[in-house]
Image (cartoon, rainbow, N blue to C red; front, side, top):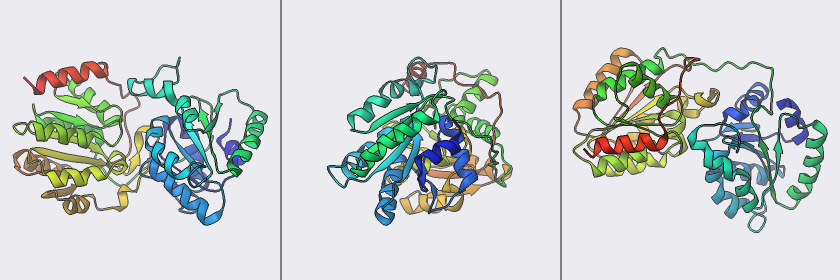
Amino acid sequence: MKAERLMELIGSDFYTGVPDSQLKALCNCLMSTYGIDPKHHVIAANEGNCAALAAGYHMATGKVPVVYMQNSGEGNIINPLASLLNDKVYAIPVIFIIGWRGEPGVHDEPQHIYQGMVTTKLLDDMDVANFVISPDTTDGELAETMEGFRGLLAKGKQVAFVVRKGALEFDGKVDYSNEFSLNREQVVGLIAEAAGEDPVVSTTGKISRELFEYRTAKGMSHKYDFLTVGSMGHCSSIALGIAVNRPELKVWCIDGDGAALMHMGAMAVIGANKPSNMVHIVINNSAHETVGGMPTVAGSIDLPGIARSCGYPKAVTVSDLEGLGKALADAKASEDLVLIEIKCQVGARADLGRPTTTAIENKNNFMEYIND
């Protein structure tokens, strides 16, 4: 089905969401149609943020908003769905469009397997009527479903379209880029070199994949790294938990801008605790690149300024190799909590691989290393 046709059948003029590769066609269509426009299309920090924004839109206009997300985001919407949107509370109608990663019977990465198993069950448990869009779903089937959904929305209920792999198409082209020159894969390698044998906690997506490939290319062990392949936005909190309990270790956290934005409250907790043995690095290309490249708001905010306001003693921004080298050397020698924002370009190798160890193997090897 064409993404444009799905939007036409839904009939809403406001979308907010967190991008997903399964919904890349829809995301690109939204960017082509609206770009980033607070009255029509907002890419939010996390899915709960989307639900609240959608509620505000409905109260201001009386119209029905659409929230799009990967199914991993269901966890972030459960609280606002139950305590804000639900028809027993404020009865705010919302249409969800959810990319179904880890669908049973469809091969996917380990972080998606359980979430895929419970995707529709969670919606059923939250009293959200749902319809699965498949590659062979017809316009007529979708129109008929949407007609039934309108009756539920009129009662202040929420509904969802769960999108299978390959179900949506968009023929248009959207370019995602920025003006920075640093290549992220090179940056990840330089961070690993600076860290040496210190433990590294890396965020979900291409950063962890690039770190894994760096170790492989260098013939190194993967025991130094905890690859946070799921739970987007939480790698800095994982690193904090390690740093405060193992103060004799230097702990490096390689975060992404989308992940840092998703749960930015973690920075306040890290800054308040000030682990002197932690280096928090945010690689900022102002894009949700792993799921397609749609922009984040990280290009228009002062991350080091936020970090300093949260209590980080040291925070810097770099955008070239000379500045990066100095910042990494200073962080290695520092006895204070440090934040380094590294601005880099959008883009990755087309043949970038994925970790060949299981998540359990990664955790066990990492734990054995840091506790040896």
